[in-house]
Length: 180
Image 1 (cartoon, helix red, strand yellow):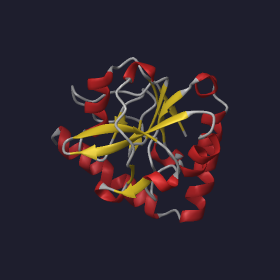
Image 2: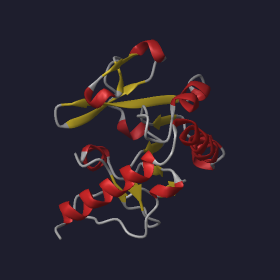
Image 3: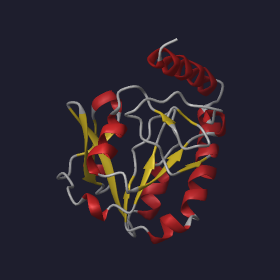
Image 4: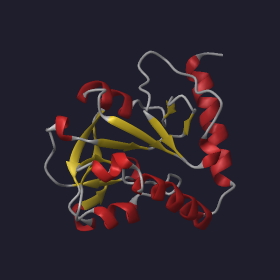
């Protein structure tokens, strides 16, 4: 089996596991995961946080962003061709449905990457070594390869998204910690 086939097989498996949970149970799990982030020292000290606008089957970030928006600067990714650009979150009125149905900001692009203190990253699956399986387009791997690997990265997932081993290739970028 090739690396691409192994990754795709794992994505299919995780999608099936996600379908076994209703929206309410995923929201409850999300609240527990985000509470752990909220109580972490790295979040408490962070001023500029890269985070994502969650899809329905991901750890929900919307309540978390709204809760902390006045105290932290949140950056949300936006799909531009084959890359992610980062944009400050300026409230729900500054969002529109973009690529893949993801809520994307319409604010100006952010370029001061050295100011990013923390990145909170989604994934289809993670292992305990910090390896991450995304949705297969490589957006986050290219983003972190381009803006520097020194940003502290926390992968967030539901407990059933943690697997023994993620198949990885040379361009896959690890997270520093997995919160589930």
